[in-house]
Image 1 (tube, rainbow, N blue to C red):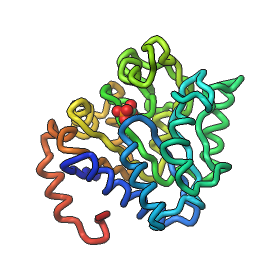
Image 2 (image 1 turned 120 degrees about the vertical axis):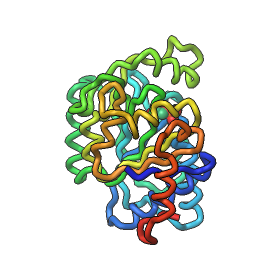
Image 3 (image 1 turned 90 degrees about the vertical axis):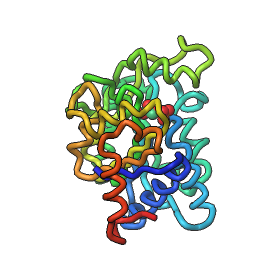
Length: 261
Ligand code: PGA
């Protein structure tokens, strides 16, 4: 795992955006996997800024989002379709026909999940997958003890995640209990994962992901087995890491071509 620790979330977003740009520039038709939630917002703002200054284009990109709530239509302000439009897609030059999110309102959700997996394969798989991490160690909406072999499917949110996400809803009772999410096996097939985490609230999950045993009780710990993962942390999210100094040492000794900034 490549661990990059920055003083602030803003600095983390900047290095993540540079990595994003580097990977996009190596592929003629990049396929990007995107995440929602509070954490990637700074990254998306930085990508928009790069786009506006002419440094970055999304015109040849195809995107696949990690997850969506069951029962929230795309026009619902709390849906991830809406989040992606307002926080990224409407402000960059991505071709709308190349945008994909799970359909949480499909008549046949199970078939829609199978079709989503098929679509990802048709586009040749995901080059770069952006991830956040839940305070309980989830990635996407793959909650603790879910199977590492899981594929895009309908999942039930844990009570903690419902509580964590209630800030985006007027009433906690309105948070859908069901979601469609890429599975752990789907994420593990992506070519490069870029996971961002900020704040002390994430520190325990971050420690378990990086330094704990690989266990379904912390789904993100499976990333220890992924061939290419970059984890960008702020100091608060990194504060429980035993080998923090080692990660900084490794970064300080990178060769030029291994650096993003
Ligand atoms: P957050 O969510 O970015 O809103 O903290 C991350 C996640 O649940 O994956």
